[in-house]
Amino acid sequence: MMLIFELPIHPENQAAMARYMQDQFTFNGVKATERHACERDFWPAVKQLPAAELMVIVKALYAREAREYQYVAIDIAARAVRKWQRADILQFAELVTEKAWWDSVDPWKRVFSEYIKRHPAEFEWVGQLFAQKENFWLRRVGLILQLGFQDAKCIDYLQAAIEDDQTTPEFFIQKAIGWALRDYAKTNPEWVIDFIDTHTLSALAQREALKQL
Image (cartoon, helix red, strand yellow):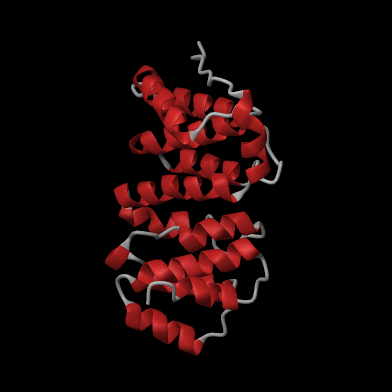
């Protein structure tokens, strides 16, 4: 039986939250703190479910109209990362491009990153789910996939991902390039400075990359 999960509705917040996302989605008006509390209450009921059953719940939540349910679905997928195998990761990669905007794509990245941390040998396989894909949201995931990895980063993958999209005019790609470089600059600022010096990057990417240097 499908477990029922319902978020409250706060009409006073709906319009502002939709406007912040350029009116692309409808909202229940639930702010993050309250949503997280609802998720914590729901988690004990689902955390022991087999992966297949939990996947059904994640997909059902993701399919719901109100935007907050996409956030809940991704959070549950991240909480349950120890359950997932390759077939599940493939399904999540497909969901990245559904109802895609930065507010869902960036949290999806966390699921893939946590999977890699648990299965380091799977990095190359996961990375290829995003490298050179036609959909730029998938490529954005590839660019930011290793945020926070510090010395564990695969620099060859990062460099190739940036060079593949170096001249792409898409704002969210250029922002991601800068974000990825800024993150690596915390560990290896010399490499980042050299990379910027030897590559023609957009003003946006350079500005983001150099924020903390």
